[in-house]
Image (tube, rainbow, N blue to C red; front, side, top):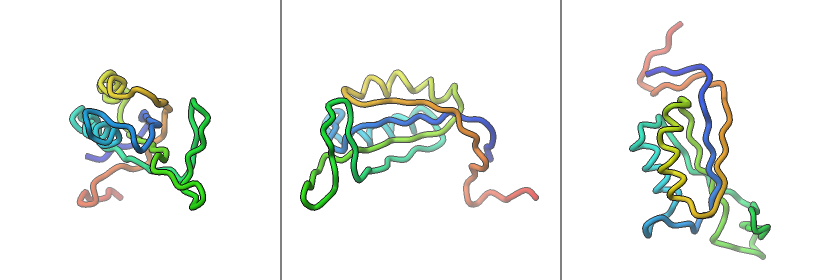
Length: 116
């Protein structure tokens, strides 16, 4: 399925050590997005960041931490993102969820033929 046009981007900012039912939260969030029919998602590990408690987390050698920021992102229709949102919110004890509308230029599986 080829998709283009205005879509909704959800970003979920959490910490690498956050857990949900004994598993990494970022994996649980991605699995929830997938079960909810969202077309795709990605977890990105940050090199530095701070949040509501203002503690700076960094990967610098002198301040090595295993609690780096993680951002889980997914892009899909407003309806698909909003349908899974209550489950996502229920999984997060501490973090930030944002939305923004984005213009999708191309989203297609590599085996799909391009139209000229």
